[in-house]
Image 1 (cartoon, helix red, strand yellow):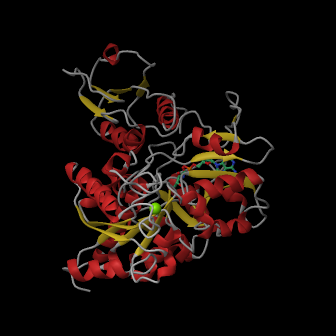
Image 2 (cartoon, rainbow, N blue to C red; image 1 turned 60 degrees about the vertical axis):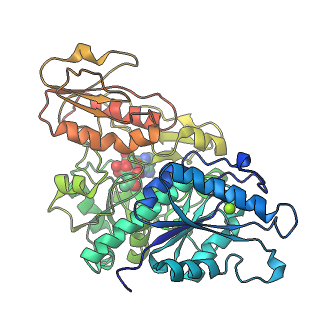
Image 3 (cartoon, protein in one colour; image 1 turned 90 degrees about the vertical axis):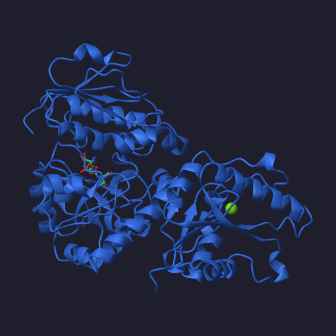
Length: 508
Ligand code: TXA
Ligand code: MG
């Protein structure tokens, strides 16, 4: 493989980068997904971009090739205006029964692009909302990523073996960039993944990236290995762990049954930031579940996590890779800062894209219950299975129910959470840092300011949250004041973390 060859991303058009609104005849019908431009800007920095589209409406006489060409030119021009260069648009105008060479999943266009532009297809990706896009990738020796926008959700059952199933183009970009980070690490440190998997197989502890936060993993059925997680984290044994799988097919090892509501959530949201609490099998060690008759399970949406679990050949029990009660890590450096020397390996897979932990839903009783707000919004979950009940909070002084400890995620610096609309200035005495939700006050009377998201994007705010808390914590401040964010979507998870960071310490 020549070092000069370039990696590329081949993008399907309809349902992947623009809305699928049938056969488009005019530029005015083009509607980009809200995440498209930003996602392609991020990819464009490292990959050559192509569009590969199938427009059988031309063969069927529904649209003309001139109309399709105008729509494609407009799409390319709009992206170029935003700094994204599409090197070439490849379009197959044929019906399947015409037996052309260029129809997906034949790799014709990819091979042509590889010859013409000197591409390394083995380091390239295809993103699309049709199973053909994933097979196309396989046929070209590239990696396929399946988006659930467009026709993606409808055709998912026809998808051949593919773990890279993501909600849309934004998460497709996250996946591709995570693969790139992984490749860079393997280049520096050949055999890294093999070593990490070997460590897990032999009872060791590995810190690894997921899309939410870094996890501290051990083989879930190896009680001694799991015990080391508790030691390293100094975690009380009454706090059970989440078990990570690389495919829903591994569930029978862990859970007695998968109720219909759980299956519906798995079909829609796995892989992703959703943990399900289900009745456990007797194979799951008591240490993992803290003696509960249930187990928490999730399939993460990160290529390194999935490959690691696969190669280890076992589900992996993993809490967040931080000392108990402290801020969760969203980069490998965060793990090094807090747990250096205590774990067998820290796998650097780049920054976590979601940035807050998974949402936890219990499906043990008839009515599903929200145990922890997190990286998947409650609104998204309720759209699939209806209203979620709230978990009952523990009484003061009683043993805390799992996942509901008052004080958690906390920096060392005392943190004061403001009420909504409360001015931060009133709390300035001594060296105070501000964790601003959106705009920083100007001029600032604060010793340090971190802004979660300048334009109020809650997903960006979640991704920045723990990093921003750590940076403020490192400034030697007397106190941090934090503004809450709007309490909807990911905002609930962010406010939950801020509230728990602000709770008075109880000696953990
Ligand atoms: O995003 C995440 O979920 C991350 C990454 C690494 O996957 N993991 C994570 O783990 O946040 P941890 O241990 O920090 O939080 C797991 C929470 C705990 O608060 C625990 O009490 C709860 O899940 N939990 C685990 N098993 C449970 C069970 N059987 N019933 C109720 N809650 C449970
Ligand atoms: Mg499509």
